[in-house]
Amino acid sequence: MSTSAHSPAPTAPSPAAALREGGQVTDQLVEANSRYAKGFRDPGMDARPVLQVAIVACMDARLDLHAALGLELGDCHTIRNAGGVVTDDVIRSLTISQRALGTRSIVLIHHTGCGLESITEEFRQDLEREVGQRPVWAVEAYTDADQDVRQSMQRVRTSPFLLHNDDIRGFVFDVTTGLLREIEPTP
Image (cartoon, rainbow, N blue to C red; front, side, top):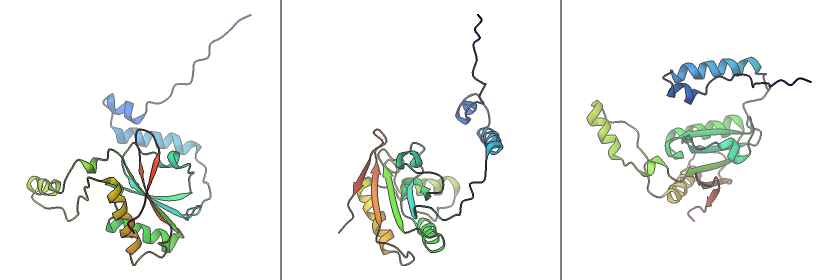
């Protein structure tokens, strides 16, 4: 009787591991995409989200929104920026999402430990001193995530460009527990 040990097939290093080893992360991402594309099959989906929902969230790398919300490819539109704040560009994306692609619900998600809580609008002044030009955009820094979620909900509710403002809900995601905490809107 003989036995043989089977070694797992070698796997390519993750982009993060490649970067730590001195590689170029973009090259690693392109290589990963090449491997992904070999097994890719067109899902035959429309650009319209199945659940008719748009989610606005922070760009923080700790937030895996699809996993945290039980979403699958094609379920939602996801709009991300620093802080998950509702800016003019977010309104632009939500307007296209609703008017051209059929979404009706909007979910806003901030999170604990956000980097925007530790910087101020002075960031713009520092940039101006460094590069000689003041950014036209606001930093949108905040010290109270709950209050900023309320402000974001209000911005969405009052936008004249959005068709549907009856199902707008806001949350703070706890990066240590993975739980969402709902924020009541300003009355």
